[in-house]
Every structure is written in C-alpha cells, then in structure tokens.
Length: 208
Image (cartoon, rainbow, N blue to C red; front, top):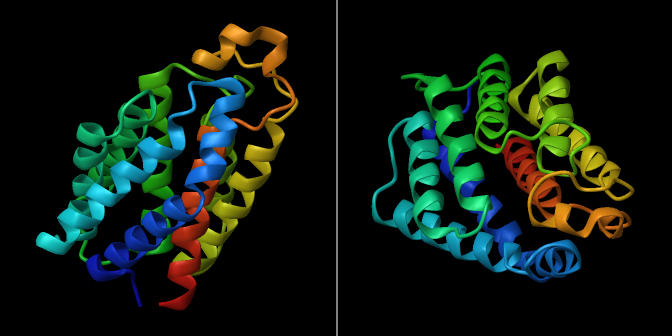
C-alpha cells in the first residue's frame, strides 16, 4: 500500500512537532556559528504550515509538499526559508499527480529536493551545510529496497550520520563561513534540522 496525501499530512504534522521539540537545540547550534535564529524560524514556519493544513488539507502528496514549500518561503527568515522552500517545491514537482507514493517516488522526491538546495545555495558536500545531511540521505534512499518506511528510515539514518560529520568541518558557506577555523567543533544547524525532519517522516511512515 502506498503513502497517500493524508499520510503525508500526518508526516508533516509530526515534523512540525519535532521542530517545536528541538527548537532550543537548533537555537543553541545556530548561536555557536550563525545568528541564533534557525530554531525560532523553523518553529514559526512549521507552525504556519500546520495552520494551513488545518484550514484546507490538500488532496495529493504533491499538493501537500507544495503547501509546505510556499508557507516556509513566506514565513521562515534567513537562509532556511528559501532553501527548505525550494527543497519541498522541487520534491512536489517530482511527485506529479501521483495519488500514492511508493519508495521509488520518495527517492525521486528526495533527489529533486537535494538538486534544488544545491541550485539555490551553491553548496557542496564538505561545506558544512544541510547538503552534508541531505546528500547521504538521497544516496541511501536510492539504494534502499522495500517500503516507503524503509526508504525513509535509511535516508534518516544517513542524514543523522551526515549531520554528525559536519562537527569537525570548517564552514565554507553562509554566515558560519565568516568564523573560519572557529566554525569547527560545532554541528551545522541546517544539517541537524534536515536529519530531524527526515527522522520524523520516517517514524510516521513506520506507523502507517
């Protein structure tokens, strides 16, 4: 059985709850190497997403992701809004009119999201950004064999490892890059939030 629009809505709601839960952690991470707004910006954005889902739940998976994209772009400040907005928008386009998602479509959507983030932010693996979490997630999803839940779980595990890999890196993109060598020793907040979101999506899919 595939993943329907209602399942995607449930997953996005779970992601919003995880963002709320980890808001302070994301603020602390961003205080160390950024401008301390990532946690609050993400919380504000996903709170707005949930409000829009409450008002009018979309009827296809792609439309759910498009709603997330447009809401994040309009409500999340800093670099995260355009980057996450682009990721969700590209993922939405990759799904087309599909009424249900299978593992292949999920992998395709993740690849499209990564392509969008790279096009928008011009970052590469090793720059200490969300790309360091999303790239291994895409690779894991593409090689996963099985259900949507298994595909997302593999992606989430890889994203967590990718986020951890940013700790010793010296940032080459964004505000953190201004710190030079002092950016080493801290996890990138965007990589961390990417891993958190994918874990929330995976956990929700596992319960479906």
